[in-house]
Image: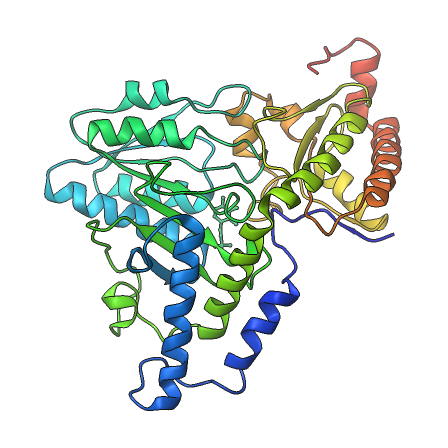
Length: 395
Ligand SMILES: *Cc1c(COP(=O)(O)O)cnc(C)c1O
């Protein structure tokens, strides 16, 4: 059996998205900046896609800038808010220890330019509270950037409440909603969000395309300099096919959001309940305040990498954390942020489901994962030390 359970890393494009994209790859391949009628077809498609994406987020079309994906949107949002802050002499930014690296590395860069960065601790359940944000805001704070839903452990943050605190204090609030968009409801106005990043390939759109929402009145700094595309906010010939497909995918995901969430979260809960029966295993992140498709466990006494390789042999595509860090042997910064000790964080497994997964696949994973965990433990010196009492169990 083949099971793709790594939808947090990327998703399969939906048929709707592919069908929407194709005409702009062959028939209507014109440059949207051209003056002739043929190119205007592309410009019209861009305008329609902007309306659609804005509509799905509760924004206005002019507040949407198309980018190359989640990473670029995060970079542009943060650099823009930092520039606005600098003009007012405000160079303090608040974020969290468990952001995506697109955020963390951009903040690191700003630190070199004299910005003061506060990374909030994350509670054991993988949630940051509005009270923590309130307590960290200073006179010179120019930005709060906190992800909507964590990409490794799937925990969903109290975004509207955090946004309300930022509004009250007059601080720009950006959220990386790459894992949330198309999976849980987003309304930038109701949720008090000033800037928000999304990426098409996380909701069955194509890779290499995303969007940044910036509330009217928030000027953006260019990350890509050149032509005047995107009203001067992002240079480069527009990826018309990709953008059209993103709009189609987002609109489809939003139209089916509740139905998909109900179906996928039932699969998730079945998987969680089954994996919990493995001894010395623990779910990472809050059990209910999490994305419909996210399951993330730590198994004591084994290495996540070996687990992934054996699961791959069994036809199961999974991850030990974020795809961007796999290949490195450092334990996940997210698991460390929620207080998992190094040894435990090493034995992590993320399974991320979507509406294409089936109950039979969950049954299969619930047969294979316990078998593989037991096999790896039978060969693990650490497990031996744990069972002989030489080392203390932590889970
Ligand atoms: C995938 C992801 C990104 C990066 O998006 P790309 O489109 O791959 O650049 C950023 N943030 C989060 C939370 C993600 O899951």
